[in-house]
Every structure is written in C-alpha cells, then in structure tokens.
Length: 240
Image (cartoon, rainbow, N blue to C red; front, side, top):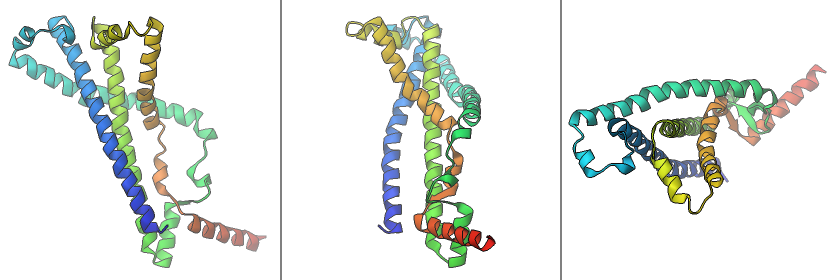
C-alpha cells in the first residue's frame, strides 16, 4: 500500500469517526439541556419537569425564559468550564505523577520517528511526501484531541448536572427513569446500572486529562526508522 493510499484510508476513517462523534455529541448536548431544564423548572415551580402542566409552562414569563437561557449558557460556557479545567489539571497531574514513570514513550516504540528528524530527512532528500505525511498526521492528532476534549467536557457537564439534580430535585427525570425500571430491576441493580452507564462518561474525562499531546510529533514510518537506526549503529561502531 502506497503512502497516498494510507493517507486516504486514514482520512476516510477520521471522517467516519467524526460523523459518529457528532451524533454522540448531539445526544450529550440534548441530555444536558434536558437535565438543566429539570433543575431550572424545579427552582422556579418547586416541581420537576415531569410534573409540569401546560398551564405552568404558559405562565412562564419572557423574562424568566431569557433568565433560564442566560443561566444555561453561563453554566455551560463559564462555570462548568472552570470546574472542568480544574478537574482536568488535577487528573493530568495525577497521570504524570503515577503513570508516566512506567509509561512507554513514543520515542521508545519501534517505527516512531520524531518530527524534527522527519523534517531534516525531507529537507536533505527533497522528499515532499514525508512532509505531507507529517502534516497530515499532525492534523489528524489535532482534530482527535479537539474531538476528545469536547466529548470529555460534555461528559463532565452531564455528570455534574446529574449530581445537582440528585441533590436538589425531588422526583427528577432520573428518579422517574428509576421508577419506570423498578419493576424489572431491584434497587441494588438499578444503582449498579447507573454506575455502569456513568463509567463511559468518567472514562472520557480521564482520557482527555491523561492525553499525551506529544503523539502528534511522532510519525510512524518503518523505512525511515530503519535508516536512522542503521546510521546510529554505524556511528556507534566508528566511536568504538
């Protein structure tokens, strides 16, 4: 398979991933909006959204609607982002302290070539294909990090709204869902299911915090890697 075919295959896989990611992001956005409305209407009417009538909604003033919208954007765009930045930094620090000492770095993986070496070799050999591969790899890593960060933030927001809802709202959507499932699940099984469903969201937050941003600077190129290793071997032999 040629380098062009590899790049085209990677690009098609990235497009497919982003299409699926967009669907998941949309679901998380909707979930956050619904959970916020459940909390917001409980603050206004002292009853959850599932207990509201059309009469309650019709009596909602335009000023209250604007206030709820502004509070939502303030919460999602400012408060939660500050909290997430703190959580992300804390988890990232834990990842560096406890995982990095035993972590395999990109430079230690056979076939991985550092970007500076790729650029140097491309300059010496006038091989523009190497430069294109490196830039394509960097762009894919950049898009991947951006996608992961947005996923992780929405996951964090969903978890935060669930916690707030459980703490403040009596008869919330989550409680209603639990009562619907109660004929089929015991109380312990319902809690186990809730934890199981929350694990992927927490895992997304952890993945973003522990993400190795240096991976975009290492290109997988076995042929070039072998050439560089052979040069290093010859240099070692000369010094002996």
